[in-house]
Image (cartoon, rainbow, N blue to C red; front, side, top):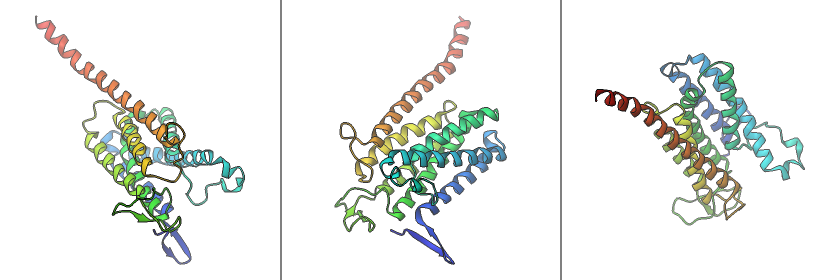
Length: 262
């Protein structure tokens, strides 16, 4: 673990906030570079990213505080986000998606196309940020005897699953898939729906190896797993429905032309 990566003078740069800022920088830059190929001007994409990032951070903090209200109700002075820690990805996802939809409506842009552009870089940012979790020692895994287990000094001296890396590697695979499918997507909004489906599966799975915040809520599943399961099933249903509709729209005219020949 390396909670403090380096110092510039007397200013420390901590692992998690540094990786979060790096994730934002990489994602925004990559999206802006791809903007013209998707029919957007880089300025518009940068504007959308700025709105989404701010709203996402706010949503991430609000959901984290809500889920840990027992602590923050006693220490309300610690609610304010000062060090870019204590965040929930689902809060960021929901807040960012809502902000992107409202922004797209106000700016008269295609929300689904914008979401398809940003989705791969959102999960790439998640992969980078999870490395920050490992560096800071948060979101740690359960005790394990696997040969790749790690010790989290801030917790104890026991070997644990490096669940942060499981999440990071899984997110990288999702990123590769979304980028590979982007030019072949069957309908607008495919990347967003695929992200919801695949991330729901990833989070549902990794939670089995995670100890922090994994208290069973129903049928032995944590709140994060239940939400992930719902997100994954809903997103998969949307994928199947819209893919089928896209195929029907593509095949329909062909059948009509074939029928006219007879």
